[in-house]
Image (cartoon, rainbow, N blue to C red; front, side, top):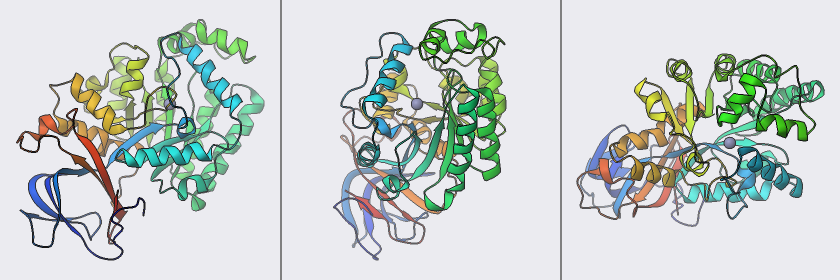
Amino acid sequence: MTGDGDESSGSVRSYHVAWFITDEVRRDVTVTLGEGRTPDIVPGRTRDAVELGSVALVEGLVNAHTHLEFSRLTEPFPATGRFTDWIRRVVQYRRENPGPTGDAIRAGIAESMKSGTTLLGEIATIGWSPEDYSESGFGGVIYQELLGLTPERLIQQAELARSHLAGIDTAPNRGLAPHAPYSTHPELVQAAVDAARRFGRPIAMHIAETRSELELLAQGTGEFRELLTEFGLWNDELFRVPRRPMDFLKVLAEAPCVSIVHGNYLEEDELRFIAERPHMTLVYCPRTHAAFGHAPHPWRRLMDMGGCVAIGTDSRASNPDLSVFAELQFLASRHPEISHLELLHVGSGCGRIALGITETDNCNLTLIRLADPSSPDIEKTLFGPLNKVFGTMTGKRGSPLSMTP
Ligand SMILES: [Zn+2]
């Protein structure tokens, strides 16, 4: 249990809310949450119900992609210059902060819960311990980041991948995250996929984030070549053969559950490749995408093809906060033609698919305070700019939920 509010131990609680939105949409109901995943819902307000007022109780929000190690940053690094300059800032920050990352991870988890996020897809690098997550009420997947281009590094990182997944009994759900095509040797990506298959765990990888990444893969030129040369990592052999994101998608598709992170510059056939595979999800990070001034994101095209799109915040190195709710408000304001219920599905159910958490043994709900409860059109108002997250309700099936705050 978390928070300082209603930690009702053992008792079943009923709440009267203006809206209840999961697979179904109900208005003016009392929700009894004692039975975990399948709450009882009755019309109107029952006598014993706690009045929550103008609140929508919705499927729990999911942040399918973040890096909590940067959660101590008070503002993102500048994203207006070259992408590799932003990467240099990230590398510099890590060098200047070499110690344990536990404080940042705990701060990031607390911030996420406060903003209504119930599950996270967290990319963990170095300096973390399982307790940073287990003692903070973390729900979601810890993806061990893997990166390296040299033969020595490849062997060491492949071993890290296996040992991370073998530690599955001592920590929450684990996965693997080969970093990106410009930083991760294709053989290491293959080793990660092999380990993910062996342990039945999810995998996530940044793919097609920038045009310069595509240039490096296709021609072995551009700002990434400069960066790798500067870091003493340039490998002529490796980038001599022309490649494209599809080459990575085909390898990743062998894993049981796959998040393709960003995908800002995926081509039509690559989007179709993802859309045709229910175990692959595109994770779109809306405000990070906007901060870097990328070309319009293809998330709608993938959805039109029947594919699954989830939402990530990425980290505080590229985003002002870790709120998925704010990401959905951002999308709602820029795409008034999209139903807010569809946005909710993207920000919750699709996120669970991305993380491979589809079993129903946990109940996760987010409470949203509605600025205009009289509006009958929740499809256009759920992520209105004046609405605020009010708390979360989480718990295991069959036991009472705890409510935060
Ligand atoms: Zn990322």
